[in-house]
Image 1 (cartoon, rainbow, N blue to C red):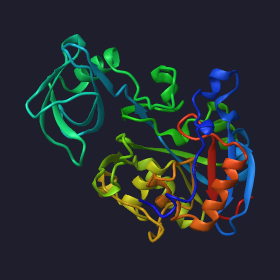
Image 2 (cartoon, helix red, strand yellow):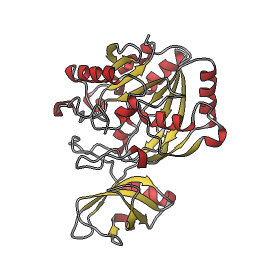
Image 3 (tube, rainbow, N blue to C red):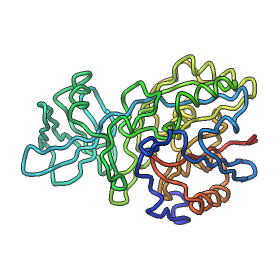
Image 4 (cartoon, rainbow, N blue to C red):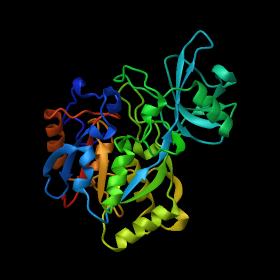
Length: 342
């Protein structure tokens, strides 16, 4: 658990429950808290004004992994189980979290549309288990999109559609939870940034479960996630680093992918699986800034943020965000951490 875990409390009223666009506003109408990583100075704005804080030549890297409906309900027998996908292990094997009932190794879980899953072993870490499905590939995804639902935590009261859990640029299915740092982007804002000389590139890192329930969070050391960095994105970053331009990650998933490869971004290392755990003691070799949401005090994401900004500055800014009514979680407000803020 990070050093900030006991340093602040997020009031229940600050849990964002409704997607911004469902209120009649635009996705990019959420608030934006801007932190200067050198001085700790805080500025308050709106995400639609992001271009005011970036400069010509900055490189913005986004995760275009698409969220899949990763919650499957077993209602075929006497019990009701919620099977939450966490990570694909093999063609038809997944690490999953089983919520809502008792089970044992060897049990078969049956869903609608003929889908079955057999519990075959313990998973990568407690409390995950590995299951083997009777479908794989496109056939599995077809069934998943018919009968699955987005993973929804207790602070979300309405079962929003899977589209509410997508970024506008999501293209490659694989994340069981939305890479939510990019949710506030609109095509209009991306076009504004490009017109202002900001370069935009994409990679994929398929995000796994971020919470196991009952105050249990994944250990980043045993929470592998797969990533792929296209050659054109690697070249864009190489040129920027060579010329001293800033590389700004959209989301902790992007930081994890880029820092897993390192500054040279060698062609042979542009895809794989990462267990990289980034803390305040990590010297970042690629990323100069970060756009992210606001994280719970127990989340290991805060350890990663501490690699970009001093913990004292971060804590003060989070307390300021609470005072100013910022909203947390995937439908919430945003945070930009950057040195030499314009």
